[in-house]
Each structure stands twice: as structure tokens, then as C-alpha cells.
Length: 458
Image 1 (tube, helix red, strand yellow):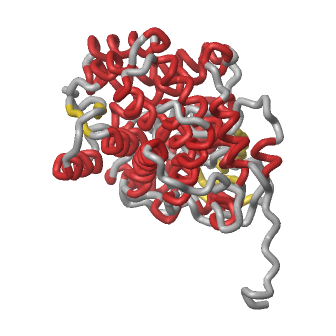
Image 2 (cartoon, one colour):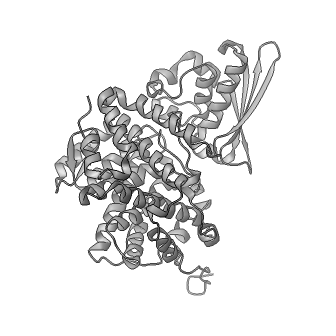
Image 3 (cartoon, one colour):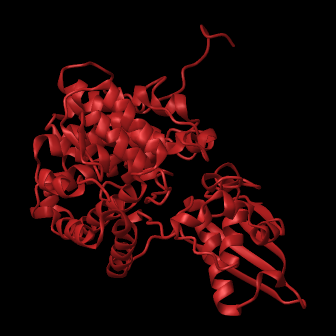
């Protein structure tokens, strides 16, 4: 069948418009308390992982490029004592927040929402000196828009090889920034269309510096899209669902019911925080291994065999069999499971290194691990089975894809993570001062927050 006689695929109507209208209707004062709590926790966690990653060589490279490029300084790079343009600051801060792969996750996007959304809204809100409540409103609006756009094109978008953190995250960033600019629904839909035509990011880049760059790039795209829409740039206002639009081109799936079918849902309730500094796809296996070691106290040389059973999609995300670098180690189910079985601290940033990847004890355990890929399991469900010397067999399972319902305990863990990651770079006094501002974000203006967060690290 040639192009002249081919029947055009059926498309749905008004998804982009409905998504925009729902996002713009969000009012911080009317948000449920648990949603507000989660938004504050996302912001807290973002500052922790970003400050910990701000000294990375990739961040330095991007800073040098931004300085050479120049522009009107309007937004702060956290922990560096410098200001750049809004788009440049979003690029640098977004990259820094994802460079350690320690930032939060949402499976509706199949990616990392805060790494894209927070740097975009911070840069835009600082430029306008918005209050913290407006920052959080825009963040939630962008978060919900990204999740609904992600659900529209799931699961095929991610399975086809697109890094949804970048492609879908940029859509949410555009909506969030449009809200801060007080654009109407028509202009916001234009911004979303501009962001949709910029969408890019390949999963083939996992394990390289391009993966964290994707997060910064998407934040930059979101800011640019909103600013261009504000100036009157035209795009389609049905870019998500139209023929040859975002979903149809970048995915075999287009499911408006999944995107819009539950109008009262807040997908931020599905947010997942990281307590291990590796790809989230490794976390269930790490938890299984930690549980088995804690309960049975075996030595590495007692381990004769290990079987790790995971959902099949993990093979294309975090199954580097023989990692050589610290970055590759974060995407190796075998090595991270071996680390946990051997008692290595998978929350420690320093443990992900070339020396760890080459450690003979870990490599020995790693090479005894057999992967089984299971069709149809929940994305993060994992089972680890050990065979020990003497014939003992141990099995346990875990699914870290289930969000915590204990927000108080989660908040405590995130504050502990914040202190652990920020004190080495800020010192105890400045870390405490920033934490105080973040805990009072609703009554703190963004420029005041960024004055504290932007001071150069030690």
C-alpha cells in the first residue's frame, strides 16, 4: 500500500488541551495535604542530589560552555556562586541533579521527574522572584502533565528506546514554566507543542554522560518553549495526539484513557525516592540481597550461585554484565546485587568506582549471578535466590515500585539523605540553613532560597 492510498491511523481529540487545562487549574491552597507534602519532599531530595553532583566533571564542562556562550544572568547554579541565563542554569542544574542517578522516579513517566522539573521551575521562579508556594504549584502542575503525557504514550515510547526523563520530562517542564509566566491555556498548549517538537533522548546513552545531560536538556527545552510561546511563537495545540505528533511518532501506543481517564488522580503520589545511588531498576535486587545478608549472615565465599529474576524490560535498562566504570556499575544488576550481598554500602557515592567494578571479590560473586527475565511481572518486582555452600537455599522477593504510604518516615529518611549528601559540600552550618529554608518553602521567596543554595561549595 503506497502513501497515497494508505488509511490514516485514527487519532483522538483534545488530549493536549485537556492536559493543559487540568494543569493550569491546580491551586496550591486546594491541593490535598499529602500532595503538598510530597512536593516539598521532592524539592528537598532534588537539592540533596544536585549539591552532591555539582562538582562532577560534566557539570564543569557545561559551566565552561555557558560562560563562553554568555547571556543575561538571571538564575543561580546551586553550590557554585554563579548566575547564568534561565535556560543555561536549568541545563547545568538539571544535569547535576541526575549525574549521580540518585534522584526520584515515577513509573507513570518511566523516568525521573524532579531532575527535569525542579531546575526549570527554579530558574523561572527566581527570575520573577516568585513565592515558594507558586514554585510548588508550578512543580505539581508540570509533574501531573508529565505523568499524563507519559501514560498517553506508554509503554511503547520507553520500550522503543526513548529516555522518557528527557522526552516526557520536557513536556512537563514547558507546562510548569508556562504556569509561572501566567500564560493562558492557548499559549500553554503552544509551549507544550514547542517542547514536543524538541523531544529527544536515547536509552542507548545509559551509562554515559549523555544520560544526565538529558535531564538538563529537557529542563532547558521546557524553559525555552515557555518563553517562545510567551513571545508569540506558533505551534500546534494538539501536538501530543495529532497525526504525526508526539505519541504517534515516538510510540506505537496512544492511550487517551490512560492519560485522562482518572481526572481526580494525583500521580505525584506514585513518586519513588532513591536510597541507593544506582539505577532504580537495581533497587529491588539490592533490597533482596541486603535482606538475605542481614538475616543469614553468610560470607562472600559461601555463595555458590545466585539467580536474579526481574521483569524483562530491565534487560535494556540496567543489565550491563561486566561494568568497567563507576557509571556503568550503576546500571549493572549483577554488580549491584553482588555489592549488596557482600555488604558494600550502595548508598555511598564513592563506592561506584572503577576499583569497585574491578574488585576480585565482587567480580567473583557477580560472575556467579544468573539473570532470568520474566514476561509480565510488575516493572520493579524482583526475586533473588541464593545457593550457599553446604546446600542451603535462600529466596526472597521485593518490589520497590510500590510507593511508601508512611510520609513521616519517608520525610525522616529524606532529611537524613539530605544531611549525608550536603554536609560534605556545604558544611554543617550551611546545610542546616538550607534545610531550614526548604522546610519553610511556602513562606520563602525563591530568590531568598537561591541565595542560600547558590553559595559556592567548600
